[in-house]
Length: 55
Image (cartoon, rainbow, N blue to C red; front, side, top):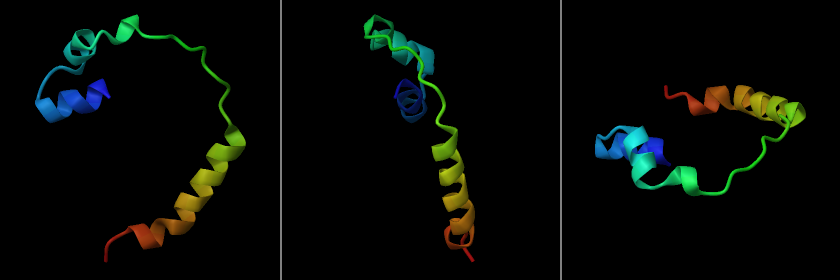
């Protein structure tokens, strides 16, 4: 969110994150990558490629 706000506001995203005090929020452990889901999404996007491209 800080990256998007930085782009929208023309500010350094790190400065936005500091102003929002994002480092003070909760911290979560990383979860394992779900390769099966990633591959399924990649197939769907690949199959839809023709529909997503403009003529």
